[in-house]
Amino acid sequence: MRRSPTPTTHFSSSSLVTLFLLLCCRAATVHALTDPATTIQFDDTRDGLSLFGVGCRKKGPIKVYSVGMYSDAGTKESLATQPKSTSSLAALRNALQSTPLTTFVLKMNFKVGAEKMAEAIAESVIPRTSNMGAVDTLKRLIADGVAAKGAATPGTVLTFDCTSDGSVKVSVDGREVGSAPDLCQAFTGVFLDDKAVSPSFRESVVDNCCEVSGTGESSEAGSATSSSQASHFWQRKSNLKVPQLPYKYSALQPVISEKTMRLIHEENYAKCISNVNQLLNDCEPKHRKLSIEKIISNSEIRQSNPELYNNAGQCYNLNFFFKCMKSKGEGGE
Image 1 (cartoon, rainbow, N blue to C red):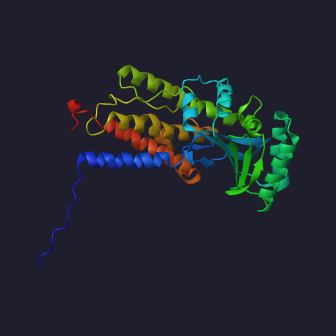
Image 2 (image 1 turned 180 degrees about the vertical axis):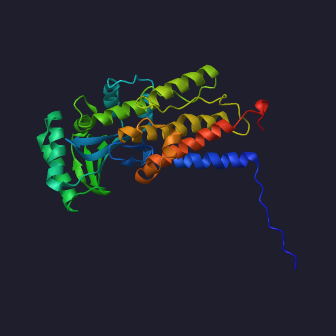
Image 3 (image 1 turned 60 degrees about the horizontal axis):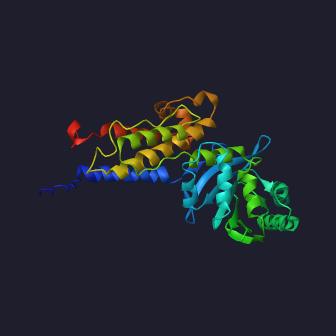
């Protein structure tokens, strides 16, 4: 009996490229930012709001929680032309006063009792407001919300929604507890003013939002400026950098559009590099200067820090892809 031939599926080169890019985009955007101090991750968006930055609240050597801030995309875009300086945070605080909703998400890394957690946050708010009645309400809401589960254990998520009427809505693990009036500006100051409780959070917001060039420019000069600014932003603290493409963003058209190449290089690839840099900064000193190739070939990192290993692997894959591609006039098809 003759065997039937095995069916063969044929893919065009453009289909394979598209599939590769989709997989890269998906891997790069699962988590937008990771707090390097705790390795706690924050998604790129939350209920339609954009992530501005993340940071760690420390009490001495104890890493108590990681905080992330979400607000509307328009406010984030307005910071793109601001200098990379903490002075830009004053402009952000002013802009947030007119936004309909700003959310602070606190993800616990260390176990804290209900009363102690409530007291710590309340004490941070007190110097920033004269409404002690509202502070007492906030303290009670936090204590009640956390007490319902016993304590703020690692993994507990406290959410504070600063709304357009000036109140702060408190939720614990997704369960709304209640609102404290007239504390929106004071609560925002806890994390964004000059005496904020998490310096790393302030720095993350500046790095993530300021001096970010637009992606709509099509000129080569615009591309060079964009790459230069992006490199300054994404690699300030580490030796790993986002290399410029060896060709123009438009060189692979019509197979891959200029818009797609900009998305992959300026956003997704840079985000992977940013994640690696953040994670390296919290590694043992002996690992902090490793190249991407050294990271993915390091068995110790693979076992002890899979997040770093996976992000570095994604960087390697994308870099390999960029080097493989060529325009039609340079031998590509």
